[in-house]
Every structure is written in C-alpha cells, then in structure tokens.
Amino acid sequence: MQPYDTRHMSEAQIREAFVKCFSSREGRIVLSYLKRLTQERYLGPESSSDALRHLEGQRHLVSIIQNKISDDN
Image (cartoon, rainbow, N blue to C red; front, side, top):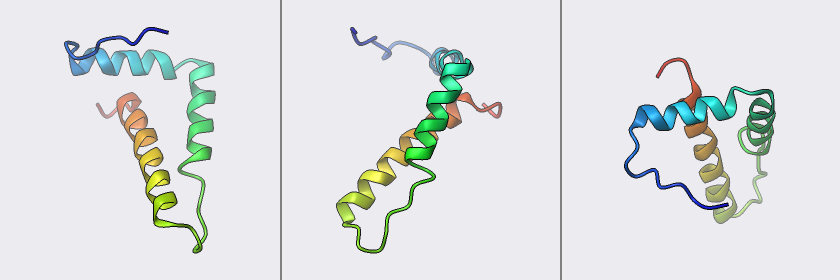
C-alpha cells in the first residue's frame, strides 16, 4: 500500500477520513480492539519504564483517533 501525502490536506479533510474509516462496523471493531490492547490494559509494578512508555505512546495514538472521530470537533 502506497502512503498518502497528507501534508497539504486540511484538518477537516483529515478528520473526515478518520470519521469515514471508523464509523463503519469494521472500523468500530478495529477501534474497540485497539482500545482493549491499549487503554484497557494495565502493566504490573514490575514493568520496565520502556514498557510503560511504549504503552503510553500506544494509548496516545488511540486517543488521537478517538478525538478525530468525536462529535466535539
């Protein structure tokens, strides 16, 4: 799959793409899965700082997706 150059797209165009992608049944399944892997996952006290940082980065990415598709935008 070829990457799509988004540098010249408006924020509204990017948001519209997110909404179209994640508003379908399949998109909701994927987002639910991503949330389960990240936001609903907790590491134990023995976890390394690298593992915690990695998980926080993943959570942040899912949060970006949720913000793009929210009705508040």
